[in-house]
Image 1 (spheres, one colour):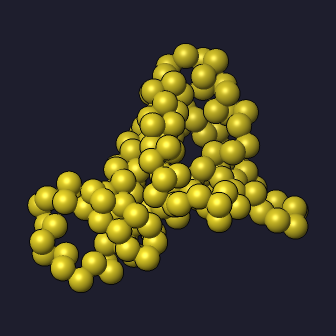
Image 2 (spheres, helix red, strand yellow):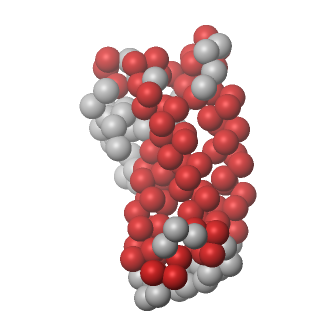
Length: 136
């Protein structure tokens, strides 16, 4: 597990622009080759049941997990009123789960853009046989 060896917010800082590249290169792209690569990918979401001992991790699961962690981090802020309407004040705010809640917030904002791009074109990326497992 890579998170065991690196600071979680540092990983999010690196992942955020890669999510943006995923959105620009694949999710907002109308190119048939890019769409075909998404159809062929086994890393976006689970396709049916898995018989492996250890379940693989899918991108949609990572996205959902990051959003859940951010919600927990934000709920744990004791002086949350100070940040209302000023999310930039969270930059550099550390807690027990990382060094920069603001970085995590930016990461989730990019995830929301990716989810919007994916689910707004759900019928393009997900064939009918995949629909049950493609939802978060």
